[in-house]
Amino acid sequence: MIVVKNVSHAFEVGKRGKKHKIRILKDVSLSVNKGEIVTIVGRSGSGKSTLLNIISGFLKPSQGEVWIAGVKVSDLNEAKFADFRLEQLGFIFQNFQLIPSMTAFQNVELPLVLKGMNEQERKLKTDETLDRVGLLEYKNHYPNELSGGQQQRVSIARALAVNPPLILADEPTGSLDSETEDQLLQFIKELNEESGITFLIITHDDKVAEIGHRTIEIADGKVLEAVLA
Ligand SMILES: Nc1ncnc2c1ncn2[C@@H]1O[C@H](COP(=O)(O)OP(=O)(O)OP(=O)(O)O)[C@@H](O)[C@H]1O
Image (cartoon, rainbow, N blue to C red; front, side, top):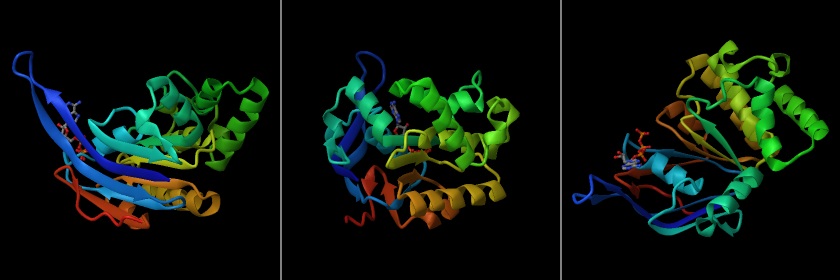
Protein backbone atom coordinates (compact mmCIF):
# COMPACT_ATOMS: atom_id res chain seq x y z
CA MET A 1 0.00 0.00 0.00
CA ILE A 2 2.82 2.39 0.94
CA VAL A 3 6.43 1.99 -0.09
CA VAL A 4 9.00 4.52 1.05
CA LYS A 5 12.30 4.01 -0.75
CA ASN A 6 15.55 5.60 0.41
CA VAL A 7 13.93 8.86 1.47
CA SER A 8 16.19 11.56 2.85
CA HIS A 9 15.14 15.05 3.75
CA ALA A 10 16.99 18.18 4.78
CA PHE A 11 15.48 21.52 5.81
CA GLU A 12 17.27 24.74 4.96
CA VAL A 13 17.42 26.98 8.01
CA GLY A 14 18.93 30.32 8.95
CA LYS A 15 18.95 33.76 7.38
CA ARG A 16 20.22 34.72 3.95
CA GLY A 17 23.95 34.42 3.72
CA LYS A 18 24.03 32.13 6.75
CA LYS A 19 21.84 29.38 5.47
CA HIS A 20 22.61 25.80 6.28
CA LYS A 21 20.87 22.50 5.91
CA ILE A 22 19.82 20.15 8.66
CA ARG A 23 19.30 16.56 7.70
CA ILE A 24 16.15 15.22 9.29
CA LEU A 25 15.48 11.96 7.48
CA LYS A 26 18.37 9.76 6.48
CA ASP A 27 17.79 7.07 3.91
CA VAL A 28 14.45 5.89 5.27
CA SER A 29 12.91 2.81 3.66
CA LEU A 30 9.76 1.12 4.87
CA SER A 31 6.58 -0.44 3.60
CA VAL A 32 3.02 -0.79 4.81
CA ASN A 33 0.87 -3.59 3.45
CA LYS A 34 -2.77 -3.33 2.52
CA GLY A 35 -4.98 -4.03 5.54
CA GLU A 36 -2.28 -3.37 8.13
CA ILE A 37 -2.25 -0.97 11.05
CA VAL A 38 1.32 0.26 11.34
CA THR A 39 2.44 2.66 14.04
CA ILE A 40 5.47 4.91 13.91
CA VAL A 41 7.10 5.73 17.21
CA GLY A 42 10.16 7.75 18.13
CA ARG A 43 11.32 10.58 20.36
CA SER A 44 10.18 14.13 19.83
CA GLY A 45 12.12 15.65 16.95
CA SER A 46 13.12 12.30 15.45
CA GLY A 47 11.39 13.12 12.15
CA LYS A 48 8.02 11.31 12.41
CA SER A 49 5.84 14.22 11.29
CA THR A 50 8.29 15.10 8.54
CA LEU A 51 7.98 11.54 7.24
CA LEU A 52 4.17 11.67 7.39
CA ASN A 53 4.17 15.03 5.58
CA ILE A 54 6.30 13.50 2.84
CA ILE A 55 4.01 10.47 2.52
CA SER A 56 0.99 12.82 2.42
CA GLY A 57 2.60 14.92 -0.31
CA PHE A 58 2.64 18.12 1.74
CA LEU A 59 6.42 18.05 1.57
CA LYS A 60 8.65 16.92 -1.29
CA PRO A 61 11.55 14.73 -0.11
CA SER A 62 15.07 15.94 -0.92
CA GLN A 63 15.77 12.40 -2.14
CA GLY A 64 13.99 9.11 -2.56
CA GLU A 65 10.62 7.82 -3.70
CA VAL A 66 7.19 7.33 -2.17
CA TRP A 67 4.67 4.95 -3.73
CA ILE A 68 1.05 4.67 -2.61
CA ALA A 69 -1.33 2.12 -4.13
CA GLY A 70 1.05 1.59 -7.03
CA VAL A 71 1.40 5.29 -7.85
CA LYS A 72 4.75 7.03 -7.54
CA VAL A 73 3.31 9.95 -5.61
CA SER A 74 6.66 11.63 -5.02
CA ASP A 75 6.57 12.58 -8.73
CA LEU A 76 3.07 14.11 -8.65
CA ASN A 77 2.71 17.87 -8.86
CA GLU A 78 0.59 19.69 -6.27
CA ALA A 79 -2.66 19.62 -8.26
CA LYS A 80 -2.32 15.93 -9.10
CA PHE A 81 -1.46 15.11 -5.48
CA ALA A 82 -4.55 17.03 -4.31
CA ASP A 83 -6.72 14.86 -6.59
CA PHE A 84 -4.92 11.72 -5.44
CA ARG A 85 -5.49 12.65 -1.78
CA LEU A 86 -9.22 13.07 -2.35
CA GLU A 87 -9.45 9.58 -3.82
CA GLN A 88 -7.03 7.63 -1.68
CA LEU A 89 -6.21 9.28 1.64
CA GLY A 90 -7.97 10.18 4.84
CA PHE A 91 -6.31 12.23 7.57
CA ILE A 92 -6.75 12.36 11.33
CA PHE A 93 -4.88 14.96 13.37
CA GLN A 94 -4.28 15.43 17.09
CA ASN A 95 -6.12 18.76 17.10
CA PHE A 96 -8.92 17.51 14.80
CA GLN A 97 -8.54 20.42 12.32
CA LEU A 98 -12.25 20.92 11.91
CA ILE A 99 -13.46 24.19 10.42
CA PRO A 100 -14.99 26.07 13.38
CA SER A 101 -17.53 28.03 11.30
CA MET A 102 -18.96 24.84 9.79
CA THR A 103 -21.32 22.34 11.42
CA ALA A 104 -20.37 18.68 11.85
CA PHE A 105 -22.40 17.96 8.70
CA GLN A 106 -20.63 20.64 6.66
CA ASN A 107 -17.19 19.52 7.85
CA VAL A 108 -17.85 15.95 6.76
CA GLU A 109 -19.46 17.07 3.51
CA LEU A 110 -16.48 19.24 2.52
CA PRO A 111 -14.29 16.59 0.81
CA LEU A 112 -17.36 15.46 -1.15
CA VAL A 113 -17.93 19.04 -2.33
CA LEU A 114 -14.28 19.17 -3.38
CA LYS A 115 -14.75 15.91 -5.24
CA GLY A 116 -17.63 17.42 -7.17
CA MET A 117 -20.33 15.05 -5.89
CA ASN A 118 -23.89 16.30 -6.44
CA GLU A 119 -25.88 17.65 -3.52
CA GLN A 120 -28.32 14.78 -3.15
CA GLU A 121 -25.58 12.13 -3.11
CA ARG A 122 -23.52 14.26 -0.75
CA LYS A 123 -26.35 14.54 1.75
CA LEU A 124 -26.90 10.78 1.76
CA LYS A 125 -23.20 9.99 2.09
CA THR A 126 -22.62 12.59 4.81
CA ASP A 127 -25.58 11.40 6.89
CA GLU A 128 -24.52 7.77 6.44
CA THR A 129 -20.94 8.56 7.53
CA LEU A 130 -22.03 10.61 10.55
CA ASP A 131 -24.29 7.71 11.51
CA ARG A 132 -21.36 5.32 11.23
CA VAL A 133 -19.41 7.30 13.84
CA GLY A 134 -22.54 7.59 16.02
CA LEU A 135 -23.01 11.32 15.59
CA LEU A 136 -25.97 11.76 13.27
CA GLU A 137 -28.00 13.49 15.98
CA TYR A 138 -25.17 16.02 16.37
CA LYS A 139 -24.99 16.91 12.69
CA ASN A 140 -26.03 20.53 13.17
CA HIS A 141 -23.60 21.16 16.01
CA TYR A 142 -20.55 23.33 15.54
CA PRO A 143 -17.18 21.93 16.67
CA ASN A 144 -17.18 24.08 19.83
CA GLU A 145 -20.50 22.49 20.79
CA LEU A 146 -18.96 19.01 20.77
CA SER A 147 -16.66 17.19 23.21
CA GLY A 148 -13.08 16.38 22.19
CA GLY A 149 -14.01 12.75 21.49
CA GLN A 150 -17.01 13.82 19.40
CA GLN A 151 -14.86 16.29 17.44
CA GLN A 152 -12.36 13.55 16.73
CA ARG A 153 -15.20 11.32 15.52
CA VAL A 154 -16.36 14.10 13.18
CA SER A 155 -12.83 14.32 11.84
CA ILE A 156 -12.82 10.54 11.32
CA ALA A 157 -16.15 10.83 9.50
CA ARG A 158 -14.61 13.51 7.29
CA ALA A 159 -11.71 11.15 6.56
CA LEU A 160 -14.11 8.25 5.87
CA ALA A 161 -16.54 10.16 3.66
CA VAL A 162 -14.57 9.52 0.48
CA ASN A 163 -14.03 5.80 1.31
CA PRO A 164 -10.25 6.01 1.36
CA PRO A 165 -8.31 2.75 1.40
CA LEU A 166 -5.64 4.42 3.58
CA ILE A 167 -5.85 6.70 6.62
CA LEU A 168 -2.83 8.61 7.91
CA ALA A 169 -2.99 9.78 11.50
CA ASP A 170 -0.69 12.03 13.54
CA GLU A 171 -1.20 11.51 17.30
CA PRO A 172 -4.93 10.85 16.83
CA THR A 173 -5.63 10.39 20.54
CA GLY A 174 -3.22 13.05 21.80
CA SER A 175 -6.01 15.38 22.93
CA LEU A 176 -8.36 12.77 24.37
CA ASP A 177 -8.89 11.43 27.88
CA SER A 178 -8.14 7.79 28.56
CA GLU A 179 -11.70 6.44 28.22
CA THR A 180 -12.39 8.38 25.01
CA GLU A 181 -9.03 7.19 23.70
CA ASP A 182 -10.02 3.55 24.31
CA GLN A 183 -13.26 4.05 22.38
CA LEU A 184 -11.46 5.70 19.49
CA LEU A 185 -8.84 2.94 19.30
CA GLN A 186 -11.60 0.33 19.31
CA PHE A 187 -13.26 2.18 16.44
CA ILE A 188 -10.00 2.29 14.45
CA LYS A 189 -9.64 -1.47 14.97
CA GLU A 190 -13.20 -2.04 13.75
CA LEU A 191 -12.63 0.09 10.66
CA ASN A 192 -9.52 -1.91 9.93
CA GLU A 193 -11.11 -5.30 10.51
CA GLU A 194 -14.52 -4.67 8.96
CA SER A 195 -13.66 -2.28 6.12
CA GLY A 196 -10.05 -3.31 5.52
CA ILE A 197 -8.81 0.28 5.81
CA THR A 198 -5.04 0.51 6.15
CA PHE A 199 -3.75 2.83 8.89
CA LEU A 200 -0.40 4.51 9.37
CA ILE A 201 -0.37 6.16 12.77
CA ILE A 202 2.27 8.32 14.44
CA THR A 203 2.14 8.10 18.19
CA HIS A 204 3.94 8.63 21.47
CA ASP A 205 1.42 6.54 23.26
CA ASP A 206 1.96 2.86 24.10
CA LYS A 207 -1.78 2.15 24.03
CA VAL A 208 -1.97 3.35 20.42
CA ALA A 209 1.15 1.42 19.47
CA GLU A 210 -0.50 -1.73 20.87
CA ILE A 211 -3.31 -1.72 18.29
CA GLY A 212 -0.74 -1.80 15.50
CA HIS A 213 0.14 -5.02 13.74
CA ARG A 214 3.63 -3.61 13.47
CA THR A 215 5.62 -0.76 14.96
CA ILE A 216 8.37 1.09 13.17
CA GLU A 217 10.77 3.10 15.28
CA ILE A 218 12.43 6.24 13.99
CA ALA A 219 15.47 7.53 15.84
CA ASP A 220 17.51 10.50 14.73
CA GLY A 221 15.98 10.40 11.24
CA LYS A 222 16.66 6.71 10.66
CA VAL A 223 14.47 3.66 10.81
CA LEU A 224 15.58 1.51 13.72
CA GLU A 225 13.37 -1.50 13.36
CA ALA A 226 11.55 -1.71 10.09
CA VAL A 227 10.12 -5.06 9.33
CA LEU A 228 10.11 -4.75 5.58
CA ALA A 229 7.37 -6.89 4.21
N1 LIG B 1 9.87 23.41 8.21
C1 LIG B 1 10.93 23.12 8.94
N2 LIG B 1 12.08 23.82 8.84
C2 LIG B 1 13.15 23.51 9.58
N3 LIG B 1 13.22 22.50 10.45
C3 LIG B 1 12.11 21.75 10.61
C4 LIG B 1 10.91 22.02 9.88
N4 LIG B 1 9.98 21.10 10.23
C5 LIG B 1 10.56 20.31 11.16
N5 LIG B 1 11.83 20.69 11.38
C6 LIG B 1 12.79 20.04 12.30
O1 LIG B 1 12.85 18.67 11.96
C7 LIG B 1 13.01 17.88 13.14
C8 LIG B 1 11.99 16.76 13.12
O2 LIG B 1 10.70 17.31 13.29
P1 LIG B 1 9.39 16.40 13.25
O3 LIG B 1 8.23 17.32 13.49
O4 LIG B 1 9.39 15.58 12.03
O5 LIG B 1 9.65 15.47 14.51
P2 LIG B 1 8.65 14.49 15.28
O6 LIG B 1 9.39 13.23 15.46
O7 LIG B 1 7.34 14.44 14.58
O8 LIG B 1 8.49 15.25 16.67
P3 LIG B 1 7.22 15.34 17.66
O9 LIG B 1 7.05 13.96 18.21
O10 LIG B 1 7.68 16.32 18.69
O11 LIG B 1 6.06 15.83 16.87
C9 LIG B 1 12.92 18.83 14.31
O12 LIG B 1 14.23 19.07 14.78
C10 LIG B 1 12.32 20.08 13.74
O13 LIG B 1 12.79 21.22 14.38
